[in-house]
Image (cartoon, rainbow, N blue to C red):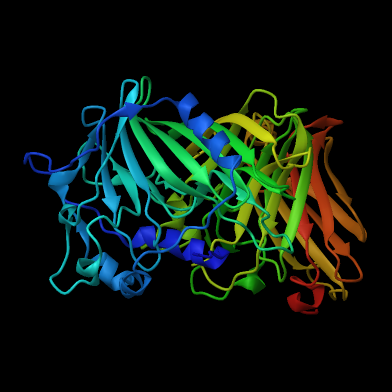
Length: 524
């Protein structure tokens, strides 16, 4: 049996960044071989998943685990897929190359190529990979299988989509820089019981009628089976039209749908959290929600001292996503991994998702190598054994969220010691500074009248609330002090109005006194 932990999975997927770009393919005849064709359609795949869920789950066993353990990062780096063996999908619009198994990718997947209403399984052959003479991979059986795959641009110089490990997938998006990831489903994230990681077992690759490539996936796990279809289009932003069908074998306390996974260590919000020479380190800086009633929310991310789960109740959400709003290189100073170029990912439901909540899970981290942020949709109705779940949505990897609000947006959140400059700073006061820009905010005259910051807090006392125009640029700044006792979280909301008319999205922040106590900002 092969047991996976969250750390195992995230270590596996982080390894994608280590694989170099591959050389251009030659015109050599393809050495790929296939099994005889079999009937295929997405409906047949759904029926297969339904039938699988009706039977007990049998844990998979790793073959040749002792050998795979020796294929570490260094050894894996030396194993290259042969360019002449590139699988050409859609007449070369979507070239596909494959990953080899290794220490961090120990379970194989089946690759099928779809043509019309049939599919053919690609036969694994070690000769498809170029490997050193002393590579441990040479000791593996000739039918060991593939670990995953990546989709390249037509010129075969760079890849823009990779699937490797559990049910994770990610795209380099609009700016060509890998960052956060998505997955098919999340089970019991941040629950007292262990998180479960169903995995893709089979992929059926086909040309897309309107896009670039269609990827049909079969999913299996101890408590759930499913069929997952991604119709991917790369034209600037990468847009995936997703159909997901899940079948529960057992009761599942928490099923996260359309889940996203990212990394947040620290930003400009709290300077005392900075432990590295770089000013900011994060793949995403906030969760954006477009609620069913039309309200726009922006929730800046935290790196808490303990696991925190926040729920945003909603009915028929219009969208949500983990975004990287700060695109200024000067704020990161990282010319190696370019955090300023990391994709934002936006989920747009198709149809009515009903009642439920967007949940945000924030997990403590002390470096940039662990993905510690998860966001997903949880339906109000609990998932019981025998239940069938169906949902469709668009998933977009881009520099900007697809449906930009016409309202002013939050562009910065900062914390510091409370009080007023030039005066003794009172103990226990924390100052919050929130900048808004864009939309009607950017059009306000410098000395516009009737402007107000509307602030609420779930507990504590708010004082010194103000709102004024920043004298450089077009942003407006809201400021206030908070005093609070105890260490329990404080939920705060803030937005700007003019004569009672709302001008901005809602800033929704969770202040954690135990992670950012007032006394750490110093005294006057």
